[in-house]
Amino acid sequence: MKKLTAALCAVLLVFCMFVPGAAAAGPALGATRAYCIIDADTGLVLAQQNMNEELHPASITKVMTLGLACEKAQGNWDDIKLTVTHEDVYSLAGTDSSHIALREGEEVPLTDALYATQMASANDGANLLAEYVGEGTIADGVAKMNARVEELGLAHTHFANPHGISDEDHYTSCYDMAQILRWALEQLGFEQVFTRNEMYTMDPTNIQPVTRYFSQQDKMRIGSSRYYISSILGSKLGYTNTARYSYACLAEQNGVRLICVTMQSELSTDKYNDMRTLLDYAFSTFTGYTDLPAQGITAPLSVVGGGGSLGTVTVSDPGVRLLLANGLTADDVEVTLELPESYVLGSDPEVYAVYTVHGGEKQESTSVRVDAEISGLPELLENSTGQELEAAKAVKPQSHAFWLLGISLGSTAAAALVTFLVVRFITWRKKRRRTRTEQGQTRRGK
Image (tube, rainbow, N blue to C red; front, side, top):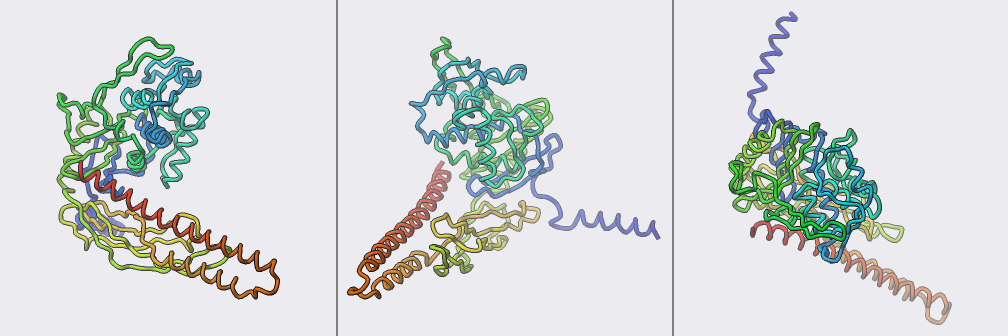
């Protein structure tokens, strides 16, 4: 009986292996442990292998460090100089790490620190940026890195340093790093640094009389290299003995814009060859975007403010533009709404439309969230203001003059507050939509 049961189980296992839809989407890599390919616009996962496995990232860590520095600077780089501390230099002693020979007390323009960290993968440059981001020590900068990880909702990342030297408490996943790169690309100036191919010149400083030159080191971005891939716009390399080879890149072809991350490639050649395999697959499978109009899915959401309920508004799906594999259509996408219990007036409304792709063997079956539409809020707030003012008018003018004045002033203040909130909300929504539209137009126009 046991033999019969075992035989049946074996047959069932073999059968399941050939059931349509059972196979994973995307290439199976042997020399690279994990990878993740996402749409750079929406963050939708297109293909993956072990994308949530926690691994040592090496220098692709610097994507987060650079992103935070660009976010803080907001493009105002020219007038910012950073002073190199003892910790920036000597915390790297004995690590045999990449650096640009910064010296304690050296004054370094922020622009130089950014390009040194990206192009020369300078660990001393990353330390300097971490102090700038944290407004104190390197540890303060690392704390900001982990705080941003939490804000992004990433579950498989923790940073112990800003450069990527291997540490038991320093890890990320391919999925998390792809989303970190997507976030970094939204920061002013990051893409400029990340995609630079030309040599960068760092002028002499107050301490160093020499001119330093930084060149782009990724062979897949060097036209004369046999590993050259024209679609790769920007990239960050990583290597330690523990992490092996890691790689994060932004690539674009025929208007399709992708982010691809690989981790733990055994050899440098494996990294190059596997990245070519992944991009060849991705750009032949995902050749265009599909516009999904709003489906008219709605749900009520209660609005709370001033210590009580103000009423309800309507949340609906806005429609979305998704990167779908060839052979998939809008019929393969399901949309639902994700709402909080209530919307507290004055906070950003966290309401989302969740689009789930049922990709089968053609595409990773996964979901992406986009901002949902909210309708009826300005009218709700105006009605609430009107009720406040009517209540004030109900007080007789000839009695309780003092209280009348207080109520009148209170009503005016309430009306002003509600008007401010209405304007703030409308401005916030318009700005968010405009940002998404501009990003989409910029990416499609390249």
